Image 1 (cartoon, rainbow, N blue to C red):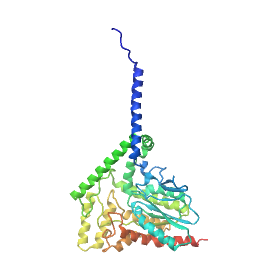
Image 2 (image 1 turned 90 degrees about the horizontal axis):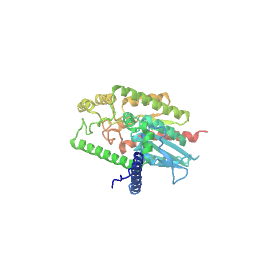
Image 3 (image 1 turned 180 degrees about the horizontal axis):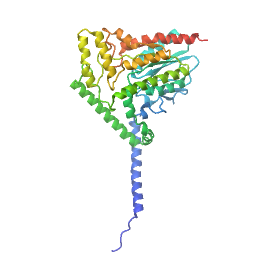
Image 4 (image 1 turned 135 degrees about the vertical axis):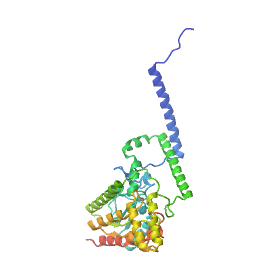
Length: 390
């Protein structure tokens, strides 16, 4: 009766507790992996394209010799597939830019058909769309580096809307903890938690957007006030970013020249009738509308461009970016299409945004037709020059 019940030593109790915990997590991991069979996890673009090992295209598992858009990149890039080693009879065009290039995919397909019908000296003329949603010049340098592996014959460059967007993307990319994120994401439990958080965040953002629409929080147009940035911008950021923009574009052009790949550039058209501006800039923009209402079209257009260029943390291209594009085109003797002027010329009253835009920066179908019509003759010149080259 007085015999004491045996007790486990502290070491054994700790070992037992650890084993129970590990067994629980192992069973949970097995359960969540089984769940992924019917509820596949999201493809995650770790680093958001800012990491040096980021790639748009990976070897195709079903089509030997081909590369295709990495599943993790399909949220930002068009899904495509092409031969890794370019055949001798193929003329390969690469289009670099942001979402404005991404949305040109239907027009690129039509242009491909037209070029192939016109130039039967080639087995195929193909256009690879490397327009990445929210991609600015910083990440386009990395995209350019990858695309040179696929022996392009011509590069189309159209970029300028995302220079401030890219700063925010960088702040959200988690590049500093990339290895850690990739390691823990090998766990199905972590993937489940990560994806549910993403679902919650997307639902919250959609709800906030709908609330803004319903409350009609507009500046001076039918556009909402620009959303709050997660990155706090300053006056110095404008100068720094424009310097980075010029540096990145110069790097792209220098690299293209080194590899003897011709480049066609374009100024970037921006919606000035319904810009996407922070509250202060939007209120200042009232003056633009007053000038236009008073019949002072040129004065209003001039002030609109000035306000956009001076806006800290803007969501669309301004004269600052376009002037850099023109400067570099002259410096590198590269043809530049004045898309900004051509779009304005096609608008009913010369004000970009009247009829050729879907929103603050993206051209609609009619606007994209202007873009293609402007680039196509220069593309044909390069193709013809290639045919005539000894």
